[in-house]
Amino acid sequence: MPSSQHRSSHQQATPTSVPDNRLGLDAEDIATLRQHQQLAHAQARSPAGSQASSQGRLLLDPGSLQLLSRHFDRVMQAISQRLEQLTRATDIATEAQYDRAGNAIQMADAEIARFHGILRQIDELENEFEKIKRIREIVRSFRARVEQMERRLG
Image 1 (cartoon, rainbow, N blue to C red):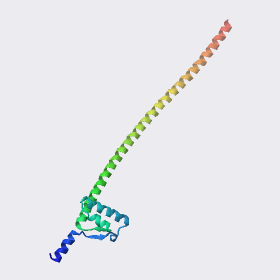
Image 2: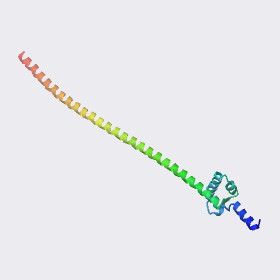
Image 3: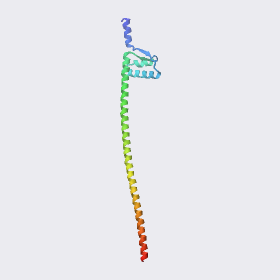
Image 4: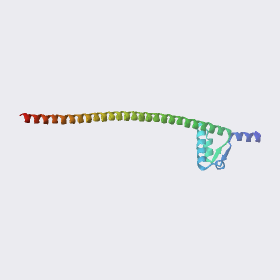
């Protein structure tokens, strides 16, 4: 095999990689990128990502970048689904709380109305008591007059 063919096939077999510290990323971003590169290659059953990460390198060949892209698409889809679940759960909780608050307001309104009814009844009873007091005074006055008349007549 000619040396140019050997070099070409060797380049295809060995993915292109660069030291991860040459990407201009901070340590946290590099660690995240390494982790996802390893996951992407593990899902594809390719040991290349793990080997590159253990050497402090990131794979930049088209195949590795495509694996990483598909992996991030799945991660983004999972995040999106989780966000939708949380949004639905939040909507349900908000609606339930709104319903409870609405019920509490209705119950409070009913209790206030009942309390107003009780106050009205108390006012009516007080008026009745006042009437009875006046009647009692009138009866006492009549009795006193009757007793006076009886004493005069008697």
